[in-house]
Image (cartoon, rainbow, N blue to C red; front, side, top):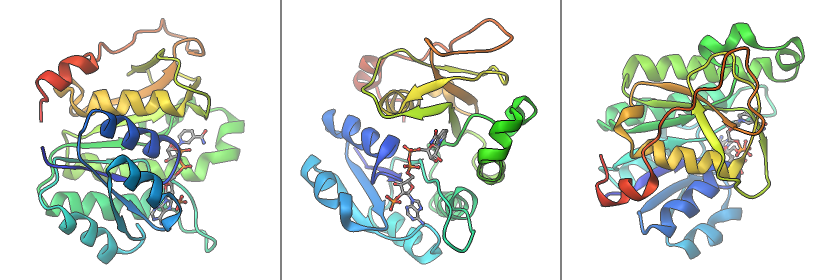
Amino acid sequence: MRPVLIFGASRGVGLALARLLRDQSIPVTAMLRSPVASAELESMGAHVVCGDAFSCDDVARAFASHDPVCGVVSTLGGRRADGRYVDDEGNINVIDQATAHGVGRFVFVTSIGCGEMAPFRSERAIAAFGAAVDAKTRAEEHLRSVIPEATIIRPGGLRSDPATGRGILTSDPQMHGFINREDVAQLAARAFFDPATRGRSFAAVDSDTARSDNSVAPFDLRPWSENLVSPAI
Ligand SMILES: NC(=O)c1ccc[n+]([C@@H]2O[C@H](COP(=O)([O-])OP(=O)(O)OC[C@H]3O[C@@H](n4cnc5c(N)ncnc54)[C@H](OP(=O)(O)O)[C@@H]3O)[C@@H](O)[C@H]2O)c1
């Protein structure tokens, strides 16, 4: 199997995803801008490429290191000291390279509040992370325009506790809630191999924290075990 190329695997959701895939012997390549997580990723058997997502050349090198890859997952997020957001700029570099390399499978981890969820953001959320969420929305829109079959996963507030196994995906734009990073990684891994998620955008929350004016309707994701028997990519 060709590798899954992950951007954002130094920590959080991206690192948990790399661990999950490697536990199933799925090849992983990770682009990191600092070597801090290299040893941990390499000890799992992941291949590490150094690079900064703000640099088109670095991102192109990551794609060239294992051409072709079987797909891409980006969990990139954050703002540089000069105010530029990797949420849009870095992710758009990744999306453009994925397009240039003909990568069809792309799972993009953004945030609750992006896209059609924007009207349902609270004033507090807009004040706290509105600019980052808007930057992620710009990257989502770019992704949809060039890789329409990509899957977008928008987690609620992230926590670092162990997985509960109760993470859900839902297309309800009014959904709010929290979710553990390990659960987002599980959902992203399952969605990556589930063809029914192609072209769709989902909120991701733990079912125990799910809040909406609508009744909670989880998307019926294919079980992980089926993905391993017949990976649909
Ligand atoms: N915090 C929340 O409650 C919340 C809620 C919803 C969604 N989200 C979003 O969900 C995603 C996953 O969150 P998380 O907390 O697991 O991860 P995170 O801690 O936000 O990690 C972001 C990743 O992006 C990498 N990165 C940032 N700038 C980069 C650059 N210029 N070049 C290469 N890599 C770069 C970071 O690498 P370094 O280690 O080198 O910095 C890190 O691996 C993020 O996009 C986050 O914004 C967060």
